Length: 283
Image (cartoon, rainbow, N blue to C red; front, top):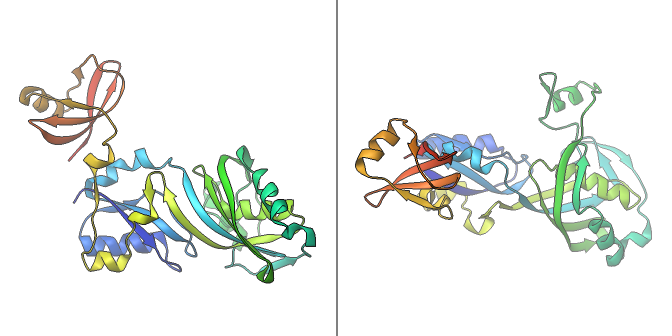
């Protein structure tokens, strides 16, 4: 099996846990395109077999999350897993729908974001959370991100929570976004739940549970289907032999990614650069 399976990750397990379970079930090489925090749920694309070779085409995808933000308390990890380190009153006027919506809209666009200390970003060979656990302060560079869209979903004044949906670029830390939103509302806050509903074109509607995988109740996205929007090139048997042996073939086609066929059979993916076609992924 070579392709992609979309898993709906459950809470309190790591992305690595899901990969290991899938390896055992499928007896195939398995990878993923980006981790979800243990407390987070939702879309986790698994790359199966030669599908792992597609990783470079998938890691820069935008993401869409449903987020719950709890106001009035700040935790050391910026989520519900950490100890409360600060509490602050919540201004009464912020519970107006118009106020919250206007505040959320100020975050749309390209910007710099400071990542949370409890993250896997490396500084001088060590992950930030390792420094944080040791109580050490290190200088962290801001990251360039983009918030494409943000929408208020629900206001729960009784529990001091708001829920919103955010469409953002790769590299966006939702925990940091939650803290920044709370600060702009005049208080503190932390991310109390996170559900990823989309990664690129992969949707939660396509997702299966790890239990479905164990029972064999799933379908997968083939490499051919993954690149269905790309143009195709058909090779003769002679050119196919050269192509498979790593020989670059001259062509008049434009630079880009192409699906490669021979005798109507899908062979894999090739790349054209400066009128030369070279192999990339062969199934």
